Image (cartoon, rainbow, N blue to C red; front, side, top):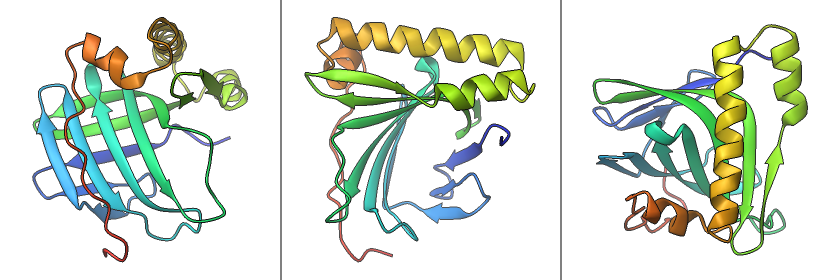
Amino acid sequence: MHSPKIQTFDPVVGTNTDTKGHPRAIHTFREHDWGLYLSRPIVGRPNAWWMETWVLPELGICLTDWRWNPGYERDQDFYIDIAEIVRDGRVLRMTDLYLDLVVRTGREAELLDVDEYVSAVAQGLLEPRLAEFALARSHSVLDALARHTYDVEAWLAGQGILLGPRAEPVRGTP
């Protein structure tokens, strides 16, 4: 079992440093009162070529919408990481808390990686405060999504969060 994965989002230099410490250049980076929006090409993954991410510190979530390569398409509209997100000036540091959700707009949300979460808690990799936060946050998000007919954007709009204009993915962008 791995320790919680940590990544940073730095709008000052325009990078997202992934969980392995590799800085990734961002195509589009926008700061908002509610957090960050970023859009970038995917490097080194055969299944996807582009991703859009919304980092929402106050909600303890990170939303991602992927552009899949042919043959790798998935039946999902948003992938939600449950996370502790801490601000350090303009930089956001995100600790992934194992639990994730897949949202299929208008139909359902599915909680994923419960086995990883339980294993991390059992092995002491996730301190009790974060374990409780992750469990409470995942249930809160599931409840909110159900009340908004599994529409992420409608739920967030009710919180005063508009995801805003989306960047246009560009194939072949470095």
